[in-house]
Length: 406
Image (cartoon, rainbow, N blue to C red):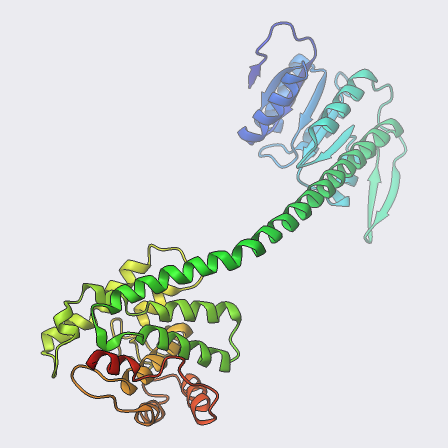
């Protein structure tokens, strides 16, 4: 039992019975600011003992508590010959009609649901303290039927009126405040939507320019692959559109494609431009570019899984890819699409160690290994784009090789 008065000038004492220290402290502060002396109890048994020994001016109690709940506490107070006219306010998160009927039945003088409105709570406290209870519970109970169940109400008319008014006032005030908040949120959302629309195009342009600048910086180290990332992004988006993917997913594919080889910035340029076949050690170092790329991108916030797409674009659906050996749908759709677009562009273009194999060879490769190395749905979409002449690279696939040899 704690008696937290914080002032010696207070006269009316209110007993707060609440097992939650946070809720108890909140009520104490509200009542203290309103000029009341507050005593706290942790449960119904402790609260009843204090009430019998000290007779507070009002009791404010939670319902769900250990040892003795709020209903039981209220019932004992109303049965006590020395306490029956002490007002009892039940403050609870229980808000079903059965809960309110039970409060009426045991003679509670007020019932306020959490989250309560401070102003309404204090008004009920002042009203109950200003109007003494002059009548005990009725001798002849009132039978009420609700939801197929019968409830016996023994509260007096004054208590019933006080309790129902408190429920109504608190709910009405909550609804008004909620409506006000909703209106304010609607106005805020409209304002934010307008600002977002104004800024989205500008921010996307800045993002695209930044990512493109990074990609161009990387490609300067390897003139043979200049334009590769742009063409892969271009084809990957066309494939995704053919698969009827959402615009949001297509945006993620595009930005992932523009930067999917960023990890090669850590690979020595002589390995990237070396004519002839690479040694196993050199090839293994180049393979690590997906992990380097992931480490670079994972700390940058994108609204799409760019880092994962960069990490997984060399995975194969039978698990033979790298670096994690993922299979099937363990590989995100963005990476499965980039994988096919990357193979088609890379096979068709010239490289230091070979001349370009041509578009038909690239398409034959993905068709042959559809369902083995490459996602068959992605492959079908890619083949359909080229064979139905629905797609052509904006930047011709051999332009960079010609410019490199010029």
